[in-house]
Amino acid sequence: MSLANLRRALRAALPDELRWVTPHSFRRTVATVVRDGLGPAVAQQQLSHSKLSTTEAHYLQRYSHGPDVRNTLDRFAADIVADESIRKVSSGPESAGVSSGV
Image (cartoon, rainbow, N blue to C red; front, top):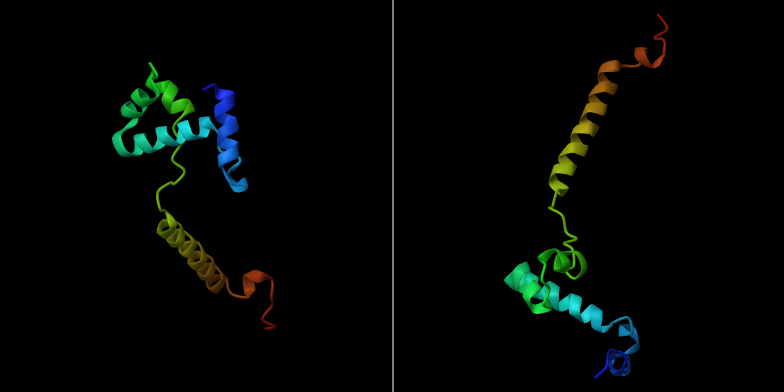
């Protein structure tokens, strides 16, 4: 089966919301699933690439989840708010240009 016939058959078989799926997207998905389950070297073998760098650069979906740093950022923000509150309290109205009238 030619690639054009494969694409045509795929388009005919898929519902409208999946029209974006192509043979290449299937290939990338298989590579990523194999990489996640068995490692990048096995994904390279599955795709018959001579170089792992080809598989990594063009076929493996990149990890899009970074580490969970929410607690660290929340503590940082709380420290900033606390520092601002301390500065406001310690500066008092005199430093804000307000005269005490004495």
